[in-house]
Every structure is written in structure tokens, then in C-alpha cells.
View 1 (cartoon, rainbow, N blue to C red):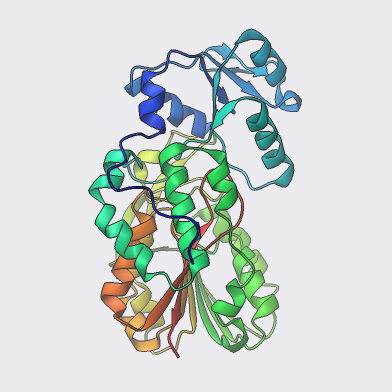
View 2 (cartoon, rainbow, N blue to C red):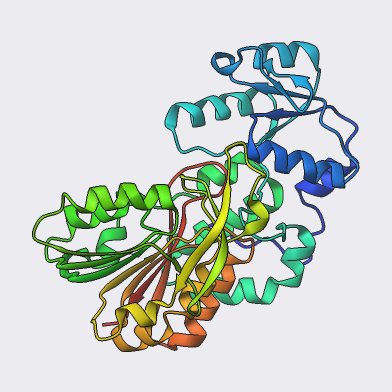
Length: 369
């Protein structure tokens, strides 16, 4: 029996509506790209931020958007009954603990900010896509996935940390993905070799990995790591996965935020370098291979990467691990596309480790035996 249920279809309230109507002081917890984006969102609603604070150990006289960054103690002494908005992401236990400790003392929210695309997960967005959201939920195989899905929806609408704490389900990913029988894998968004290392450590039958990474700095580190691997065929592609072969503008960052979304260039606290990158179809680079497993983590280009994998999916029926959190629609659109494309050949599961905001959502597609 599923404990958590989906929000009602006719829900009218969300975090953004509450913020647009409040007269209470709004404080931002954190600086950087997330805060830039949140300030712009609030200003578009006619709201201004009263002040910005950071954890006491991080405050060293910085200024942000013309305001001196306060410590938490200073902020609470200065403002009575504030609304606190967290505007950074983390999975570090000590930082999560600090956020949740403040939540126990103050009214705190963690806004759901799309990493890619312009659509925010508002009540109107939910109503507009309710039938798709419901169909996607019904396709999930296990009750744990359905409870996770419901908790994520409640979080996206309310920004409440309690739903994020509930939205955690981990521990069986390697078993679901059949690491034990994996011989040929594709790693899209290979970064610096972290997921490659995981596969090599746990998929003992693995012989071949095709690793795709578009960011120049990341690719250099990936290449350096791959050069240390002995006895495996590691094929590296300095490219982005897409639905067709072409060259596109690319905002490089040297970290996990590298993206084909050119609009992000220059908006982050780190420096982006906008360049062009070769885009490849997975169908083209895997033709003639029997792929057992494929990971998609493309910072918002997951749908395009899937569309470029259609032939391979039909040919090989690989297990798939797909990041489903970069765009507001990813939580339902990726699953529905797979079901429409692959028919009744897969079961679907959601898994997520604890982080803020609702990152690290993984859609796992398992071929039926």
C-alpha cells in the first residue's frame, strides 16, 4: 500500500504564490548562481530580498548584490519572523544538518529551481500536466518508487524540507541495473570518471565502456583516469549526446554544470566559457555492439540523448539509469517517452539519495526478463 498520495489535481497554492503575497522579510541562505537565479525570480514577482546570510564559518566580509553577507546569528537578531529561502545545493551531511537545524528554529523553504529550461513547477504547471504526471506514477513498478514520486511532487509545490527528507530511496540500484552481468556499458556525462570507476569496481564482467563527456577540462581528467585502467576497452568521446549529429553552442564550466543550454553561460558564480561541441547520436557510436547498460546525465539534454538512442534501445534492451531532475518536466516526460518508445519491455523505478534541493533523482528502466 502506497502511503504518500499525489497532490490533488485542483491544488491552488504553491510556494511562489505564498511568497508573492507575504509582507514578511525574505532572507536568502547562501550565495552564488542559485541565489542569482532566485533573486531574479522574486524580482519578476515584484518581491525583494531583505538580506543574505551564510553559515557563520563562511562569512568573511563578503558582499552579494550590494548587501553585506550576514551570519545566521546577525540575520535572526536583525529580523523577526523572517521567511528563509535556501538557495544552494548540497548532499554533504554536515551542511544538510545545518539547514535542517535552522528549519527547526525558523520558517524555512528550499525552492525548487529548474537547472535547465524555463518552466517552474507551480500549481498551474501541475494542473496542466496532471494527467501525464498520473500516468507516469502508475507506470512505476514498486510502492517505494510511487511514495518517492509523491513526496517529490509535494516538495516541488511547497518547498518544504520535510518532503525532501521523505524523498529518499537507495540501496538496490546495482542489483536493479544488473551490474553482475554487465559486459558493455555507455556512460553519458562521464564527468571525470567517477561513474566509470564505480562500474569498474562493481561490474566484474565488464569488458567495454564508451564514455562521453563534452566539457574540455572534465574530459582531460577523464582521459587521465582512463589511461590508468588496465585490461578493459575504454572508448572516450569528447562530445555531447544528442538526437542528431551536429555542432552546438556549449557552456563549459569545468564542473558538473557544463551544459548545452547556452542561456546559462555567464550567469553562474563560476566563469562559463561558451564554445561549440560536437554532438553525437548514441545509435551511431554503439552500432554493432550489444549494450547492457547506459547512464544518461546530460544536465538537461536527457530527452535529446534518449531520442538519439532509439535504435540501440530496440536492439539491445539495456538497463538504463537516467537523471530525471534537470527540467521541471523530466519527472514525467522521460518515463512517458520511454514507455511509448519501448512498449511493454521495461519496468520503471525511481531512486534518490538525500540532497537539497530535489537533485539526484534517478529513473531506472529495467528490461523485463
